[in-house]
Image (cartoon, rainbow, N blue to C red; front, side, top):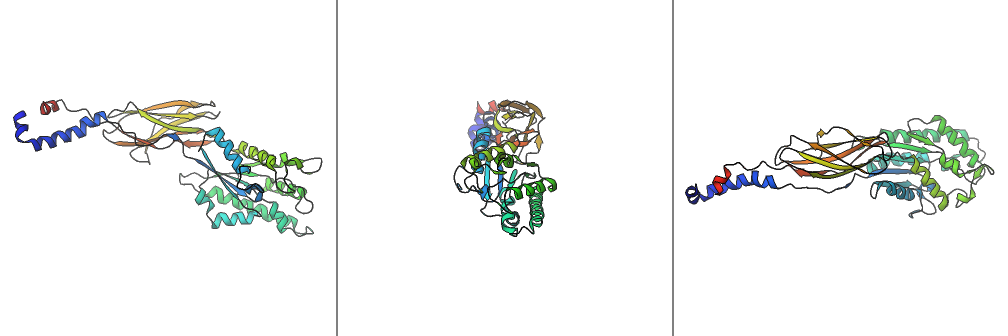
Length: 355
């Protein structure tokens, strides 16, 4: 063999390199091609008027969307949520609906959750001074809010999911007349009795701002007759936070114990106090195609380490994988990661070529 190799070095070099590349190097190398971290960011879109915008604190950390983001990241980790503020001063329900249709807010945001509070400007801008068309304005505004709900819930995100939408009763104010707190109360009742398809209708914002002694807004929470002050926006952000489902948090971990045909996929799951299950998706591309058995991650408040063994891998082949965690509030995915299965060990006769 040594003589043959000596006279035909190129043939043997090619053969040995092929064997070594396919088997020897493959048996000693495992490459993790991606990064770890929290799962993809969940998106919350906030729709509304100047109160959603945060007047007079717009573009500061005192608006309810900014405070909400801080609360979500404190609970679920930095980067776990993106909160988008679509509040625009003076906006009515019909204008929000128009922007959803014409500016493609849903297609641009692809939100997991939409928060909606609107109606004050509809009453103040469209009701006649004598109130003669008051109930007509309420009926029309409720129909426009319903159209917003329908548009949001019919949107299909890239992952195939539909956004959820939570609708809040409008807050009281300290003005009189056809757009005062009494009018707002009648409008809220009409929303409650007529809206369908929303994932949640809640009145906490109205309840916390309403002063039964004055039948108007609590002055301690108001910047002016219409808009909350810093304390008021803090109350509002807490109320919105409590409406957001505590979906589990999922982190895709590293791969361990890789062989030519098997590997252990690792991750972490935070159930957020709801009974939670998890599984791993894996395959040759980010479309995956394979799922492991669904297992319990418990119902605790802290992260738990989880792992699953996968088998029947193809040697020297790249695999993508991620963890998926599910509870009654929803599902979350970890980041995509990837690895290369090891190659088979060198054939015994390879020693004859090398020595």
